[in-house]
Image 1 (cartoon, rainbow, N blue to C red):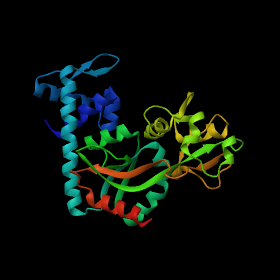
Image 2: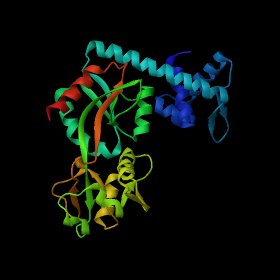
Image 3: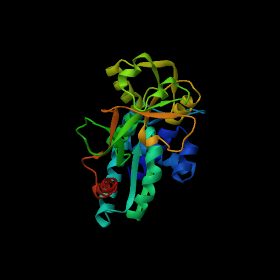
Length: 290
């Protein structure tokens, strides 16, 4: 058994197709099939159930795949440790952020990182919060921008900034009479919110529950930009994080809340065991400059 055979096996497990797996692994299909067959013979078990139309994992294969993923993650970690020993500020760095943050953070951040860390190969991942946390645990990403606080003994975090919410309304809405607005004023209104799974939805719901604000049940947006367009179309009103607001925007009005305004705390999160702490410290210091 060797690392290469495990990589071949997981490629088939993920893709469910020998041809596609061979293409991904840059080998011929007979070579890949032969190595997996050899692995099965070495282990004395059937890892894959093969039919004319598809390939699927056997029950034992599912268990072996789980163990193989763990092994390959540790191999990657060994390589990262060795790479960091040569140059802690070089190599691959996988950075995640949730969708209602990544669109507005990455465009400004990437040029700065390239300037201060020219030898770093930055890979950006946009996923919902739960997926990013799972990827951190599995070692599939090195760090992520997430909303704090985060209760997780395996992870550590550093708060970077606070992002206030403003109320977004159509220009002809009656609430535009207010220069600032108290959250309790919204008790008689319903807010447009994102669909399930977005942390911004959960943050907005927390505010709504405290102040007795209702949710518009007939409409749920898949993303923040869709939510913005729904407000512009006159569908309703919503919370908009300050980081997502364009100063020269037309067709929508943003009303600040009276203090204390609703807000979210944004931080960088990483594993306690990371070998990329030098890069993480550089990114944190870059934020602290602003």
